[in-house]
Length: 263
Image 1 (spheres, helix red, strand yellow):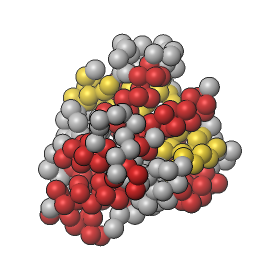
Image 2: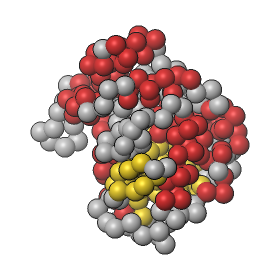
Image 3: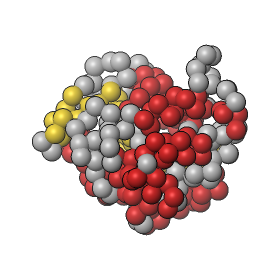
Image 4: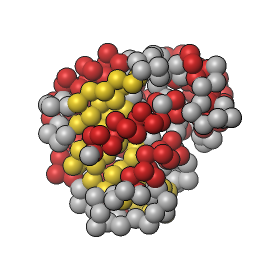
């Protein structure tokens, strides 16, 4: 589905069913250097079981017009404009990595528009190593290789794709390689500059779920549990044998956690 948001074309996947604003709405927000396609399984599951889905391509990502936004807070405000574009007053938000930071800020800034949040593979701060920032700016292909290596647990690098015949790390590398020039660097700079996570977490009043991966070296499970402790009455779930790319490595376990939370 194509929307006009702040004068630009935005692509939104709806899980294979027509969007209906009268149903409970779930907004899925991808991470740095990614796009709506990472949400294929949960988006279809929710869309075919009573909810309307908006799996967005953030500005400059996927099929959405650019340029990319430069801060987590700008991206959070942009999601409010997306809700306006489809005439939806309130929605649930599910985010992964950078997308979870954005969802957290949406819940803090627009509490009347957020029914619940699920934060996957994130923390109250997501600093980025200077070598990765430099590579993303000067040698994007090297940055894609670095992120792919760091984002997957050991088993994923040996195969391990839940879909037989699929190459997990190769798929992640191909996902990153679709980025337009400058997009990944803008995302990583926004993550590295994000400082308001702890305060945003303390102000959240809607139901919240934090899903972490036991083998995540980018946003460790300990940091995920600490984030959950900052959010009043948040649930915390840790998925075993999994790295940062939870949606690729353990999609069924992620979906089960989401269905249990929304159920």
